[in-house]
Amino acid sequence: MPDTADDAAWWEEVARSFAEDLPDTDGAARRRHAVAALADNGLTTLLGPARHGGAEQPWRVAHRVVREIARVDPTIAELLGRHYVWYWIAEFIGTDEKIDHIGEVSTRSRWFYCGASDPCAAELTVVDDGEAMLFDGRIAPAVGADVSTITILQGARSDVATPISALAYTSHPGISVPGHDGARIEVSGADIPWTGALGHVDKRFEPRPYNGLLAPTLDLVLLDIALAARTTYGTTAATAAAIRRADEAVEQAQRLHDRRRSVTDAEVRAQAVQVSELTVAVGALPGPAGVRSGGPR
Image (tube, rainbow, N blue to C red; front, side, top):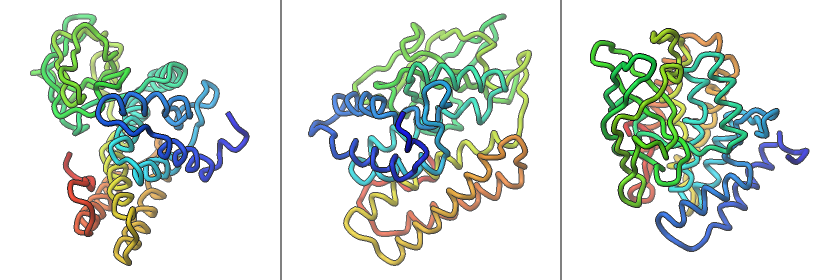
């Protein structure tokens, strides 16, 4: 890791160089090459603990990296941005034990994450099988399943309203990814130990306010991508104003990330409202057709 690993501008340059070196190919081959190159450049472990080989950068740097890559390839930027959100899932909803363990193995193994397009969907059914949970169903739409190491499984038991989230290897026998676009995941009897239920102790979820920042964080990532696409061919006054608002939202989010153990429900709700209002504003800006601007996934 270079001496300038804590320099946001340095990481932006890494992201810029990565994006400029992407091969002139399409589809799955381009995604596979990109994910391998992201890992080789240290970008997949940007948020990971330094003691385990990560860069241990703050979220504000992750947002800048995503925005930089999105200027060249919004699709790859979305893969990386969603990976960052899922990479952080133990921080969002896990127990202290899981935060430390997942942070270590994710970083050392350079895992690449995928999951549902909507992080709040919890589309799978979960059955309590004693020491294990059995996940069944379909995750669709999904993002990045064909290039992932880890799939985030999210579902609910029929007798408990609280969703359950767990990590599984995408190569798990109970998980399959049909097609070549990584947009659908079939789950059949995927058995995960109850110890892998994030945020659960003795099969009961232990909530905390920081749980609620997961979805607004993804929305900010999607806004990074939308704003980058809208500045590719120049910046209008309205777009510049939206970028300033997005930067302010990122800084506010960073303050919440920094004190995630003490953040309040009211602060998380305020951040969600701020991001939602910005999503509407960015969606109203002129820009390339088909570019998502956060909001409902």
